[in-house]
Image 1 (cartoon, rainbow, N blue to C red):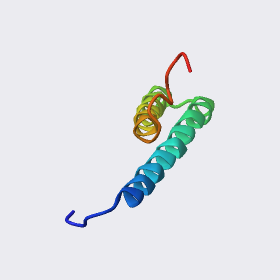
Image 2: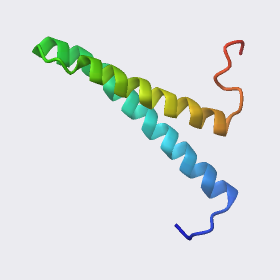
Image 3: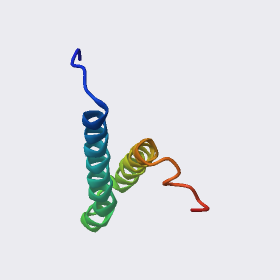
Image 4: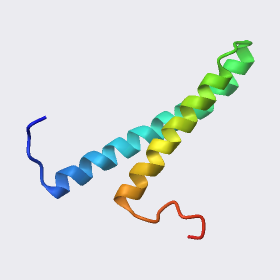
Length: 73
């Protein structure tokens, strides 16, 4: 990666990554219901993926808007 990007482009990329992580989080949060209904043992894995994407989304939220995930706010 040798391209130089300005702050606006960097912010767009971080927001796009945050939005993608949010979509993945929603996907994996919905998945345990379908997995459990089918009798599969993948529900714990879906919960782990959902938690991982939630963590990524929250970190990117903090990069974009510091304090966005404060418990007091």
